[in-house]
Image 1: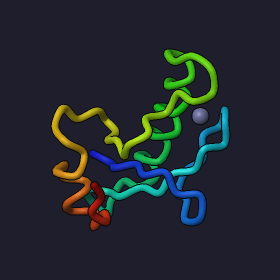
Image 2: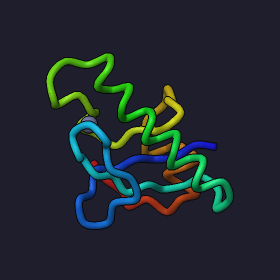
Image 3: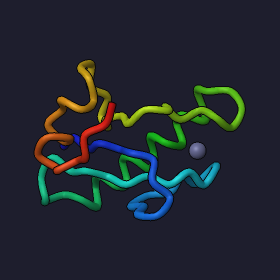
Length: 86
Ligand SMILES: [Zn+2]
């Protein structure tokens, strides 16, 4: 299922194992959260494998798995109750 990841140090559901960046997650469905969290954790590690330096994570909210549309219109954002952002 799809998850929206927004950087949030105060209400983090998952933390990058490499750099410690913290994300709050918005889930498309309530079930399967643990699998989704594990997947996001893996995706964050992959950002470091494919990126350069420490600032490898997207600055804007992003979806896991990747979604080609705007993140704020994704199912995870709409169904997960994500706050709106610019
Ligand atoms: Zn990281």
